Image (cartoon, rainbow, N blue to C red; front, top):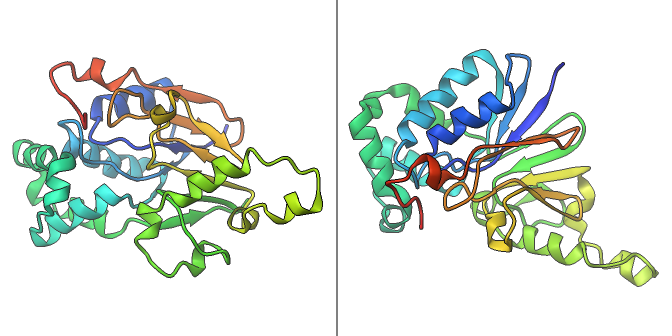
Length: 245
């Protein structure tokens, strides 16, 4: 069976990545779509990136850029250390690169340099880390940073989900951004902020960031069947660490 699987924010949780890949019984036939934020939080960011690089040799993998990946990539390439990044998991990522010996790996720099801002599959399903603001679609976005920072898409989806299509006015107020795509998949905003440790659907958007950076789990979802597999909560896998708490 050939599956298309989407994976939420990992944030250096290498143990969770290994666990959820095993629980989902990943095979080389599976297409894996990662929504970004591979680093910053738990202590094994460098190991996580190395595993993703190795996965891409056996599987078709789509790697989306998250805001934390932008920071880490700039550090690896230019030595740039954004103070905001350091305070939000960057220090742990730097330590993991020094400890692991992967700091000098050119393949890691290449990984970050070749991340995609978004991916649109052959069934008109859109995948990106955070969002976009253009009413004309993701390809018309004016500011690239919105792909990995925007939260208005998620907020609009939550609002649109509450609107009942009973009148013409209701239909006209449906957000135009969503109507370009069959489905949209994002990360960036943990579902644990809404007291959920599973993906949340709002309108035609799925949020697959189930809080792995904090006290939640790492999730893989089958895009077609909507079946999910999850790791244990990350604090159980890293009992002596705080993550991004």
